[in-house]
Image (cartoon, rainbow, N blue to C red):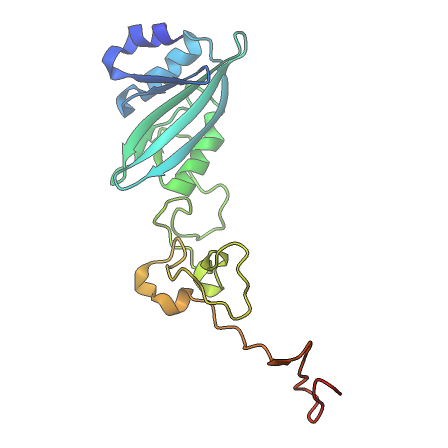
Length: 208
């Protein structure tokens, strides 16, 4: 399989292998040709999945996994599209199963698949703005409530200060540290001896 890819694409394809599985990187102009070649010449008749990867600052990766059911051979195909113009030809004319996956990638990353028969919202509610799986997408819910990552694992929430004063991921610095810092927990009642003073019962001390 590797030799066939090298013979066809030469220096236009970057081929790597890990744990017996081949990964092929090509330019967007060779994307559909590579998919077609994998299906017709390499025996990869089964389309498994397609998705995007946000690779800041300049690009998105589009990744597809196909499979040869006869030889039980896996093939991972990748290409990159620029962040300012994330456009790629649709693979639905090669693998019909790419339809759903391209719609999800369009919705979550904003990659436009030209020629897709129905490139529209799939999972998000109507009127939703933005692409949630982009790394610059603002996660407002992390500002609206305390962020669990504000403390180290095992660190108590009773009066121990946070060791990290960074904003939660997905929160712009312009929103300010106050929005991302959990409120200070109440100071626990003082103790005397083995038991705590009951402030809700005046006049009763720890010995009473």
